[in-house]
Length: 164
Image (tube, rainbow, N blue to C red; front, side):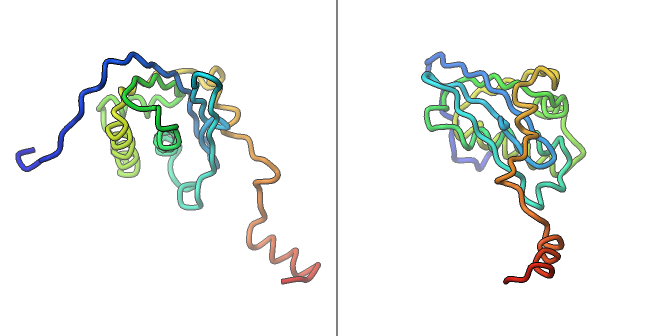
């Protein structure tokens, strides 16, 4: 800390409070993963994990889902309090400083701290049962238009029907 030259901005005295729901599954995150309620409508954000991310433990994915959600939030989601509903007790305990033996989870938690600091947010995490989490089911939805064949299966199709 002796050599740190940065600063932490004071939160402005606006009382904006946003309640958000987030979830992760084996292949995706968000509402369709995550819901960000805005003044005129709710913003729904989601995406799929990369091949590398699919290999991560679900606790790390739950944490990365929150990181991605906050990164995808519009610019006005800053200098405010975020109440985040999650079904991940591990995420809650790790965020509240109880640590983790997993380097991947620690790295994901550091990324979350970075986004929270950058946007000057006060992040509060609340546990909600999976069946009561509105983001749970949509995070598990796989659209037919967003699915694809594995390379092995595509090669089999090419062998039978030809083409490039």
